[in-house]
Structures are given as structure tokens and as C-alpha cells.
Image 1 (spheres, rainbow, N blue to C red):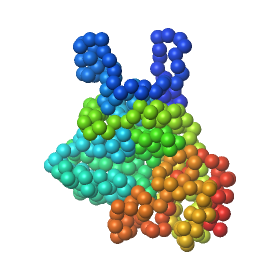
Image 2 (image 1 turned 45 degrees about the horizontal axis):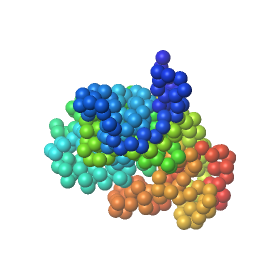
Image 3 (image 1 turned 180 degrees about the vertical axis):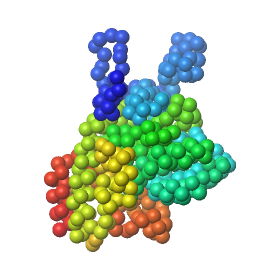
Image 4 (image 1 turned 60 degrees about the vertical axis):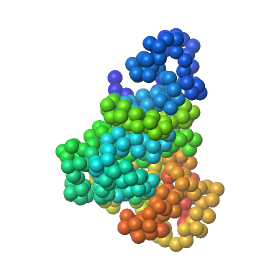
Length: 388
């Protein structure tokens, strides 16, 4: 039987046991190392044939449970946890590209990803070209014989552009490259990139998958062969997730379907209101009809567009933020059950020059709103009071 993402998330981590009286919730495996009765058992663990844990950096029972759950949600053969979303991206990039290879990536990538692509990978001999991923002709022109990877965000941070995943997958594969998709803003409750041709799907665990700002980690999902290559890099780099963070993420994952439905509904309602407010210059949300990829977003996101939106404010930013104090806090992250506000020019994209930010469309008046699951009437009242 095929279950919906909501059911898969709610049952995440449940395993059949040979006896009754088992714990309903898996416990935290705190041990950093495991003992074996024989050399044969030890070899079976280290070779991977037994699937048993042996050392914390190589994997824990909690991480393994989370990996199975996310692979099931994404519809992929396997997944591997990392210490952070950035660690997951680095593991994915290094699993596919090496010195002398070339990566094409969306110029609208998250600021941390932008820095990794433009400052760190070139130091390893990997060439990177940044393009507008919504311009398929520009993507095609950027692809080279040595291009190994095309990387995009399903919904970009912070301007909410929508990547045409089926078209990009076709382009990448036609040129002998892979497609990796950062789907952090969407979550598998709303989008499963592998269904549209993506080879690797990346998430920051601290965002929607955990959902409560209390766990750090990243995860990569894909084919078993690719994931084992990613895992090898993560283990060698020491970039694997802790048992506690994996366990905490799994607890949040169980309510993913319910949370994403509330996030998406609230964000759509707020986008509709703000787009008609005199103090708002522009709203960036794929559910608005004036969004440049509105029709594509409708096809890719039939269950909603997630809880993120950005807007350009007319007037004093400091005053607006101050009026929201104690209601919608200023916080440099996203995807909590409570709404938060962020300032991209000073947080995610602070490493870029003012000229570079302007070229990407990230103005000094831009604010990003991570819409929570609060009552929509209360949220709108808070925002309208701050805008008065």
C-alpha cells in the first residue's frame, strides 16, 4: 500500500519488533562505540553487511532511523544525515565533483551556499558557474563537457523563485550531469524532487523537518549508490549528525504534514493581504498571480507553497521590527512553529557586497517572513498593527 507523506511522517521511526512491550518512541543511543563478540561480527559491522552501528561518527541508531524515514518521505532508495545543512551540501557536492570538474548553480542560492560555491569549492579545484536557474537558455549555455552537477533550490532564499525541476533534470541528464535540489523551503510534505528527476535532495534538518528550532543537522536523499558516496565524504570530514539531534528531528518530523498545511495556508493569506497594503512595495510568494513562476508553482506545489515569503517595506525598518517585538521576533533562521522575521541583507546574504545583493534583487528594504502555525487572525492583526 502507498501511504501519503502525512502518514509516512506520523509513523516515522516505527519498526516492527519480535516482542510486545517495546517502546513506542525510540530511545536516544548515547554510546559513542559498540562492542562485538567476535572478529566476524566486527567485520560484518565495519563492512556494512550487518547494518549494525560500531562508532558514533560512522552512524548511530537514531541517525539510521531518521535516514529511513526521510528516504521514505522523499521516495528515494536511501538518505544520509549530516551535522548541518551546509555539511549536507558539501558532502553532496564532493560526492559528485572533484578537482577539474565543473558545477552550475543558481545565482539565487542561500548566502551560505553561495559562499561555499564561490569561495571554498574553487580552492579544491572545482569550477563553479552561477546562472539564473529560471532561464533555461542560460542554464544550457553554462553547461560544459566537464559539468558534473547542476544545483538549484526548489524555492529560493529569500526571493522565492521556483525552479523548473523536470526541465532542469532533463537538461542536466542530457549533458551527463546530475541534478541536486535543496528542498529545505518546501519539505517532502509539499514537494518530492526525486519524482521530478532530481538525483539528490538536500534539507537542513533544523528547518521544517524538525520544525521547532531545537535540532541541528542536514540530510541528503537519493540513490543508494550516490548516498554511500555522500556518506563516505561526511564520515571522512567528521560532518555527521549527533544522536540527540537526529532523535529530536524525528520527534518533529511526525507532525510535518499537519504543520506544513498550517504554514502554507497562513503564508498564502498573509501574502494576499500584504500584496494590497500601501506600506508594502512588493511581496515575493509563489502563490501570488503576479509571481513570475506562478503557473509552474501551481504544477509543482499542488498542496501549497510552504510557509516562507519576503516583502519590501516602505518606510522605517527599525520601527517596523520594534513594533513586532514580543510578537514576531527578529531571528536569523526559519521554519519554526512560531513566526519569525529575518533581514537577508544583514544575515543570509551579508557576505555579498551591496552591489552583488542589488544585482540579485535583494534590497536593503527586504524582509523575510517565516510564517508559523499561529491563528491567522492573530498574525494578521500583529502585522497590520506594525504597519499602521
